[in-house]
Length: 443
Image (cartoon, rainbow, N blue to C red; front, side, top):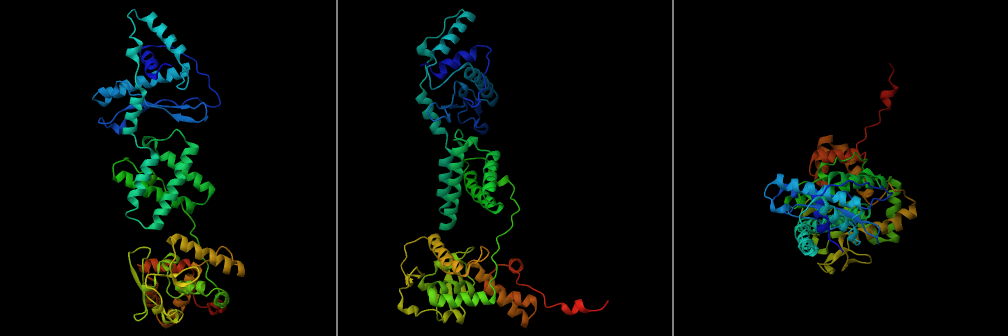
């Protein structure tokens, strides 16, 4: 079986015409030139893919270097590789198949060479090349897309939280599966492009929503930026893709009656879930933050709780008396245990933060939402919105809007007045007084 080097040698030095029979499935991809982004210290080569006879999928084959890397200027290398690329394409059109014996093709080119050149051909031994040597060099030079992303995730592991890292891992895994399924011939980093990521994000958009598509864009861009910062790739293609306008998720506030009914029902049905909810309602914490609380994090004497918040390493909040009255005697519990576990207040629970949060989310759906037949617009966050609204409307009765918001900002923990005002608008907490008397005025 003759090697690609032997065949390409004759094609490189010969000129011939051929017809190319187009079929439904192309047997091969057009050969391309890899220039290592112009870096002459790296190997340049020609590469292509050929349809594997067993899998039926295009398979990336060992690249062809030839003598290109002996040249020390970009122009010379590109000139040689351009001839290689054209010659290889002609060979493929003539019927070269890397998975079959190409003796007939070799003999055809051999005869043509003899008829056009009186000089003796080099011996077969002199023309042979070790493909394994090329493969070894290729493996040294190229970092696969999969390995590059794994490297990026490994570095991210040191600078982000467990939940964020899990989100990155899920997004990367989804992209790699899509790539393998839709573009099996794309393996190495030099094949990545903005257009490729755009196609993937469009696929996410079709299957889900603009909001979800934007989340994939953000997480993939974050991992790619690590590769750019470490000079593994030159461009963050995803960063240049525009963010789509997405309607934000909205958790409705509960009516006074629904709120009272839920609290009354949980007092008998599930006291642990009720106390879990009251940390949203009275302390204005997020689900994941409540899941992080350990017994030792609560200081009953100072009426405070410390926890790892979304945007800070450690945060301290005041616990109102209405919540402290519902807490059990914490002095009887072990300090390092979690405050909330499935069956007990203050116990060990070998589960990740995400798993703990998901447990209480599913528990709320099973125990509360299904029982009260609540729609998708209502969830655990709805309690936070409900009680922020209630608190703001009480504060506004006694002070100006600005003073009420200033006091409220200390309680909710919003970083800026702008952020708080946007939040209040989103949950419709700011409502005007009854304006009926204006409508009754005679013109």
